[in-house]
Amino acid sequence: MMPMTRSLPCSLLRAGLAALSLCVTSLPALAHAGADAGGHHGFWAGVSHPLLGWDHLAAMLAVGFQAGTAAGHDPARRWVGPLAFCALLLAGALAARGGWLPGGLEVTLAVSLLVFGLLAASGRRWPPAGVAALVGGFALFHGAAHGHELAGAAALAGMLLATALLHAAGIALGTAARARGALWRRLPGALVAGLGAWAVAPLWMAA
Image 1 (cartoon, one colour):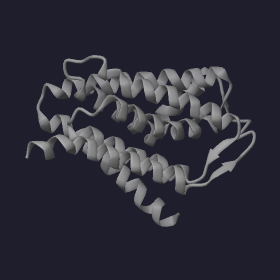
Image 2 (cartoon, helix red, strand yellow):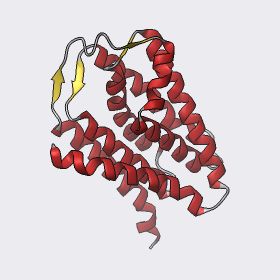
Image 3 (cartoon, rainbow, N blue to C red):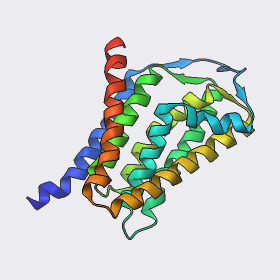
Image 4 (cartoon, rainbow, N blue to C red):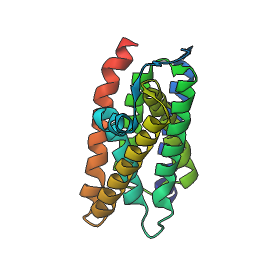
């Protein structure tokens, strides 16, 4: 029984990575030079961007929440997922500014909600390298969505600040939930996963 219990986190993590790989390989990348070059400018436009899209908002809170619930007595674990997300978010945004616009972006963002929600709802401590790979991989697509609409360094800086603050809020909520029992640790993640499933179904059928 114990080996099966210990292998469950790795199995679920592999399933999440497989979902990410499926999104990457099955959705064609479209060359879209100058992606929305007249997009939103300025620092505050960048700050507001992650806050006004419910999918981005829920995903970033879920990443922070999972980090807060899983950190335990190892504070370093708290920042692995959020830092990977921020770094790859910026990389995806810069790639989008350079002309990269992946096809089926909405489907991939919805799948990320489902995966992040399941990670948080599991209530388990995941291997840090696996968390960084999974979270960072999906962050590339979130970054592409932002970079397609934001223009200029100030807007990207605002996007990163808002993202970091959402992660910090999620970490604070996760840390508080960890002290209140299993239900509080798992329910928010389950809600995010439910949102992801609700968003994925019609998009996947229409694809």
